[in-house]
Each structure stands twice: as C-alpha cells, then as structure tokens.
Length: 287
Length: 269
Image (cartoon, rainbow over all chains, first blue to last red; front, top):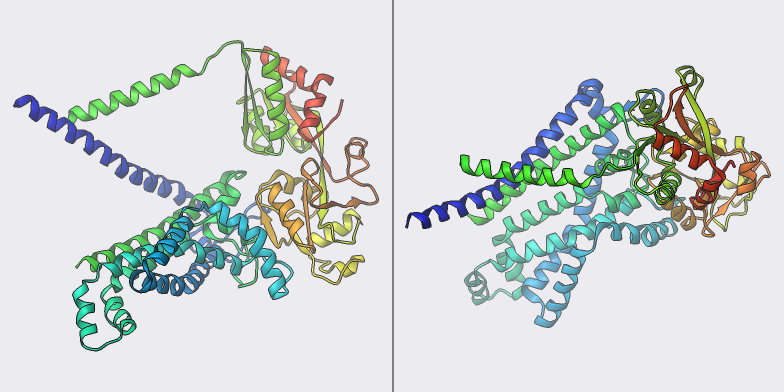
C-alpha cells in the first residue's frame, strides 16, 4: 500500500517536472529577451528607438529607429486580416453548415494541407510567381512590396481562421437553428442571424489567432517584401519587425546586435498582447 | 519536491558529463575566426586539412572580418580571417596579413537587359540613386531596380567600399543571401545586383566593368577591379602552434590551390 502510494507520488512528480519544463522555457525566454533587449533601448533611448523613422545599423553614424518596422508589421497584419478574414470566415460558414459531405472532405483536406506547408515554400512561390506577377499587373518597377507580403500572409492565416471558426460554429446547439427554421427563417438567414452570432466569440478568437500568426511570420515575408527599411507604402519595399531581426542577425555585432534583441522584445510584447486578447475571447466563448 | 529536484539535477549532470566525453583532444587543434564571406573557402580547406592530417581538429567561427581581427589580437584564436586588407592602424598594432585568395564581386543584370558594360563610377551612381533609368545607359526606358545585400554582409561591405558608396546606397531590396539576389535579378528585367563571382550562373548576366569581364584570370591579374582579398591574419613575431603552422603552410601551398578554386575564389599561388 505504502509502496503504491510512493509510486503514485513519483509519477506525479515526473508529470510536474514535465509541466515545469514548458513553464521554465517561457520564463527563460522572457527573462532572456528582457535582459538582452533593455541595454540597447537604454543606450538609444526609448523614444528614439520607437519613433525615429530611420534605421541604418551599419552606417558610420548609425541610427536605430524601428518606427518603419512597427508600422509595417501593423499595416501588413491589418491588410492580411482585411483580405484573409472574409475569405476564411465565409469558407468556414460554408463548410460547417452548407457544404455537402463530399465537398466538405475535399475542402477541409485542402485547408489542412495549406496549414502544413512550410513558410519557406510560401515565400519561394511568392518570390517566383507573385512578385513578378504584381510587377506586371500593376506596371511597377519591382513587385517585392508590402502588397505581396499581405497576399502571402492572408493565405497563410486562412487555415487557422477556418479551422477555429468551424469548431465554434459546430458548437452552436442544434436547437437554436431548429427553432429559427421552425419560425420560418430560410437556412441562410438562420446561419447568419442565429449560428454566427452564437459563435461570435469563437470567431473573434479565430481572427486574433490569425493576427498572431501574421505578425510572427518571418521567412515568407522576408522573401517577398524587399527588406529595405522604408516607411510602409503599399507598393514599396518594406521590412517587418520579424524580418528586421532575421535579416541582420547573422552578421551583426555590438550595439547592432543588442538593438536586434530589442526589436525582438518589442515583437514579443506585441505577441503577448495578442495572446491576452485571445485568452479573453476564448474565455468568453466558453461562458 | 526536494527529491525530484535532486533527481533532475542528477539527470542534467549525467547528460552534461556524457557531452563532455565526445570532444576528443588528440593531435592538436586549429582555431580560425572571422569573415563570413570566407565560409566556403575555409570550410573546403579545413576539410582537406583534416583529411591530410588525421587527428587534427579544425574549427571556424564565422563572426565577421572585424571580429576575427580582434580575436587574433586578443589571442582568442590561432588565425584570423578577413575579407578585406588590414588597415594601417591594424598593421601598426602588430598584425600581419597573408593573402590567401582573391574574390571577384560580379555586377549582375537580367539576361534580357541590353546593357553589357558599366564603369565603376556609373555603378556607384546607380547605387546612390543618381541614375535611375536604364535609358540613361543605353537600355530600355525602365526604372532601375537596385538589389543589394543586408547590412553587415561581407559582399555588401566589399562592394560598397570598392565603389565608394558606403552608407549612401539606395536599395530597393536588401536580400539575405547570394542565391536570393541571383533569383530576384533573374526574375526582373530591370534589376541590377551584385554577387560573389563564384555563385553567378546563366540565369543572370555578369556585366563587364570598364571593359573587363569578370573571370578567374581578370581577377587574378587585377584588371577586374571589383574584387577583394581573402586574408589570413596572424600576429607579428609570435610563433603559431604546431597545428596552426601546419594549417597555415598547407593553405598557402600550391597544393591547396585546387580546393580554393573549387570553393569559387581565385588562389594567389
């Protein structure tokens, strides 16, 4: 009896340790980012760092302003949401409520596949097809632009939006819809006026998840956005927060490297905010 | 709780002890530190060296030319690697350079582009944004799309210092690898870019500079001007370790020349 108890405790202990590993990783990363990110901000000055529109990290008189990156990340994410959410949302309504079983299997299979494609492949296809295409379509000298990044990001966030929205829509009790139909509403009226409002917290969570995915993406946007540290323009070459870190990290040194950590810290804070929002919506959808 | 803490600590210690066993110290070691542009050359030479002298270990720390020079000065590595010549003050601080090889930087355009030849001044004017249209250079009426490398890249450093355009380049795209530059230029008929000569393929057209087309010969005889040396940095009058001396002798011998060519640079021997 006693031995069994000891064994139980032992197993509990192992699970506790495994759980603590995750917590430990998060703590470690947070502490490291803060510790590594603060010195450069101190040296540069918070206002200069956040609001100076010029980034020239290796110039003889270096300037470390990340305003262009922040604005680009915000605009790029907003653009991706603007394009991706309508498509994703309507797809999920169709799949959850309207689609015949066969079509549903095919489309949700395709959606899962889309989620599984590595981001570097999105980047490559974007670079070989989308960028030259934009160049020709809009008659601009170069297609690598914020616009190209928005298109790539919009496609990349589709799977998370569709999958989470479908789950939310399917969780709506069938009685609600039955009642609406019995009162004489058409099926489409029912879906948009009963099911969707009932699932709105879940759908909001899907959108926030999409925002998180879009703002954190580095590889794909690096390959299609041109990477020049300009203030964002729809058809201009831009650099995101993520790509600012990724593109200069390998050769950087000194204050430049510290500033890259500070950019990562800013990005981390953005992601924390988004996560908090996500938790808020998920909690609401449970209640 | 305490018990589990002890348990994890033991596990961690056991793992680290195992990791400690794997590095063998036999026959001597050579450590190099510096230029990232020399990665390919030094990698091939390191392999060849280890093949020739079994038991020797060779390490390369890609930190950039500046850090490599600093590391030799402070005695943190045997041989420093630099993809630029030493500055006067660095030589005065007691460092010696030995040129290992030369590397040409090709200026590349799309094969559809009609321009074949530019001089260094014109290239500089393109990169600083004074010339913005190919028609000014005898090409099509199209805006020039200026492609370059990211800040800190050895190729960018080399290109900008030879064309005297440091901090003045107006890039439309800053890409993070030679391959990306070549792909982008091959996709856009109005683009111009630069890349290590060794990496240039038929997808793009390498321009001749001041009438001299880039090739192994023209880099070697110095007539192709957009080139930079790959340099081994050592301390004046300080004896290298046996292993490091063997490595130094090997890479500067004629025997190493084919390996250097294989890695795309032009050997001096």
